[in-house]
Image (spheres, rainbow, N blue to C red):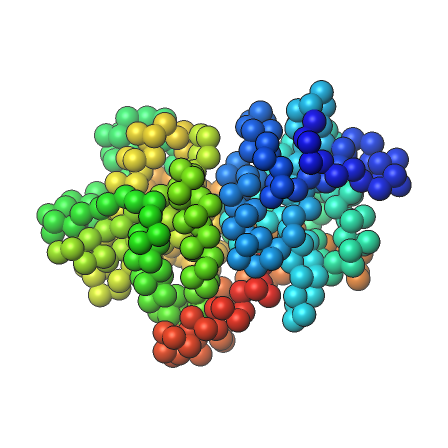
Length: 360
């Protein structure tokens, strides 16, 4: 049993006998070891991601757990987001592409019911979950995205042959142009990424997350061996950069950025190919390309062109005031994009610092 497990109130224990309590991965030194015993656990369930969210934005963990004979049998990880602008809500989990609950012998419905009871007591406006789990009684998807997964359990030459012809040509073009890819886990590599990230977000009309978010990623994820930065260079100048996370059998492509003026060199294609080879060499069974908005056909084609299998990622949003599931809106593309794209970079970064603590 987890040493720092907080028991549920007696009423919840009676109503949800399979739910053993609430756990805090920030104070439990054995949390990741406990997760490691369950085959359904993933990177986003771990301590590193919880610490990044907490130290950057102050989100508070409410991880609903079930145990049997000292082993974790069920988990619904929730962060409480509290904002004077957007209210208090539970999110599983903020800024996460996908977050399937850890399931097993326990009845997953019990975990959802316990989270709803907690939300009523905490006066949450919503409970949002980023998963395809339909064990939530009466659940209706509020929003959907594409997900893409590449099977790495095959020789790299076969992986390359499975790419679209356009990708293979792009990789060879980048190699002919002497584009080089380097891997690192240093704060300096994060600074390089962030410079390109801000330019990319400006081009898309979106504010970047504050630098402290990526600084915490460097400290709690990269420097603990749970991820890496891949950067493409042309004549020693960084022209593309991406951040990957990994845990156990799966690697995750989380963030990507590039210099648009250098796209003719195809640095993104070479970066992805070299990263695929690195993930395969490290023994990962699959690479998840993260989620993609249904409206972003260009990014969808890019991910599919590497031979990735397409899936659907659904989100669920329960409105406590209506006692019902409600639809949500993908806010990646709105009328605000035009305004953000015209802001000078210092103002765009300031916008991100102001806005992101209130978002999830």
